[in-house]
Image 1 (cartoon, rainbow, N blue to C red):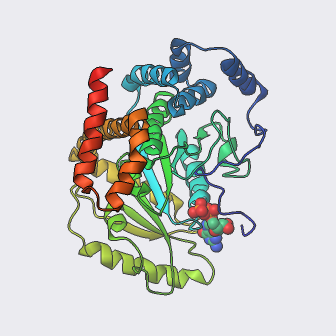
Image 2 (image 1 turned 180 degrees about the vertical axis):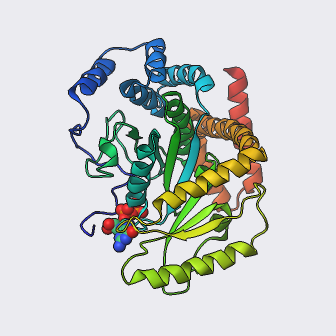
Length: 366
Ligand code: GDP
């Protein structure tokens, strides 16, 4: 266990790694064919709907592209896939680097496939520098799950903004679901804003923690606690067991101080160890109970509708921002206007308005 690097998660992709052995020569041949030829959207859609992984990977690469033609093709594919998506449970998993996310996902994913589930593991990591179009990254990451024919692992998309990276993952969910994956695990690092983005695309949100020096709640952001549907105290093994149980009790007390959730669900706390594997079936049982409750009271379906609207608005915001900052006139004026604002030569509000006016005028002319 100890020799495993902390980067072995779906969040990261290493450069220059050849196709893993577990991809059959047949699948590699299919991928190469898809890469070489301009495969039509129709062929990709048919491939995805029949569960063809090469088609799925190719379509995700289109979603991740910045090329306008690729994006148009991606939109066409996503629209065609939509009626076949949605039949899944989407689970977000967060925790600081080193907490044990990838080790947990490996064990949890294997448990799920042993129950007959088809599991897709995606990630949201705005700092990722994945090379586009690579088949699969790090061979050693989730080494058992990666060989499982009922699991599909896709590292985080790259991008300059969290919004962009998150949107691509949101669209990838649709494609994976249409390809028959019924359990979607979305990993994110517990630093920065990425949890909020992941929370807005999942049904159930899991927070992984390790027991510290007895002062468990220190340094943990209130917002993340509020988002969590379950908190798992990880690495509850060896000398850690007692500390883990104390941490569990402390989190439990803290969770009860929060106002009741709209879902009607009371967040749970539990302990888990990747070494003993104790606690994995219980996590799935908890999620099943959550689904029973929230489908019964309709919260599950209402939340998904809200999330769809959220992603529509997010996409508009993202697109408007990109168009604005990429506009040649704005690029010409932005630096000098920033300097003028810093030197108090113009108020930030007037400067913003001026730039927006320039942009709008050029839009009208074009
Ligand atoms: P991530 O960065 O959150 O994905 O963390 P990893 O899954 O890479 O785990 C970080 C380190 O913790 C690795 O060395 C793992 O072997 C170790 N680890 C993970 N889970 C457990 C556990 O349950 N018990 C113990 N003792 N070590 C663990």
